[in-house]
Amino acid sequence: MRAMVLAAGLGTRLRPITYEMPKPMVSVANRPVMEHIVRLLARHGFTEAIANLHWFPDLIRGHFGDGSRFGLELSYSHEEQLLGTSGGVRNAAGFLGDSFLVISGDALTDIDLGAMREFHESHDGIATLATKRVADTSQFGVAITGSDGRIQGFQEKPDPAEALSDLANCGIYMFRAAVFDFFPAPGASAAAGEGDPPGFADWALDVFPRLLEADVPFYAHEIDAYWNDIGSLDELRAGNLDALAGELRLELGGELREGLRSGEQGADEEPPAGPVLVGEGCEIGDDVRVDGPAVIGGGARIGAGSRLREAIVLPGAELAPGSVVVGGIVGGRG
Image (cartoon, rainbow, N blue to C red):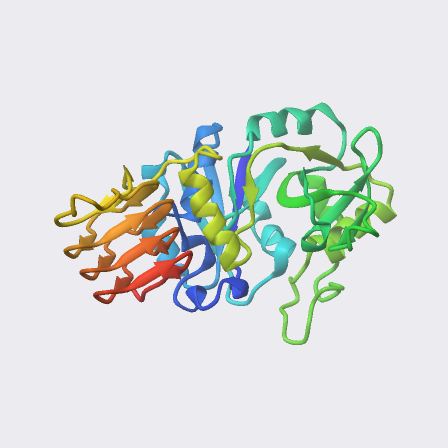
């Protein structure tokens, strides 16, 4: 089974960070979030993958190259114009083969892809969608299922009082190639707006409704793994702190310490505490105190006398001397 990593989106909800980089390159635990996904694929035996690119494509190509240093063969599908959530997949259909995985390159998860594939191969449906129970359905599209897991319908961000399901669609799919038979004809997408290319298509508005209308079986695979779509600055911060807390399986980038203090420490002063992840090549001035959980990205510069607690300092960011950051995210241009 080959995989497609979706990496073409603009990441508008993570602005201003994504004014300077694509969302898949935003750092979680001192590695781009897409790197965690690529490493996840390799751990589960995927050897070939393709990523679609659009926004700052050279940053992604430059980091991942051919994928060999991450344990798989990675190729790319460049989109001059965005083709939508499913249009980009159709554009790579020649690579994907008879059965394939589609996974977001800008979400954080440690899903057991082996278990999902086992379920996918156990039924005769055209697709398997990973789902996870959530407390607040108003933030997610949810799948309505029968007792056998077959999908019967969807609701888009329903109020919890009106929700018919609490199974959030995680945007992680396994398909059989026959799914392409249910795509809209070029230029006929219900989701396309003015200026979108003819190949534009969307899973939720184009493909999944056609499967339901044709009574084609497809199924939900409920997971209990960690999943965070890093859809906002608050979720980006939560993903970093959850990684430090060991709530998901991933590889941290840098050295994990129990608090950080540079320079001399007064005899009566309590030592800093809490996990602090320090990336490579950091410059930390004198008399800096960092109480965890906190992340200091690679190449960051922390000015003398600064105080940080529950802070995320992204790679390459700079803090002026005497800065105080509590519960914030500090970005940079490089």
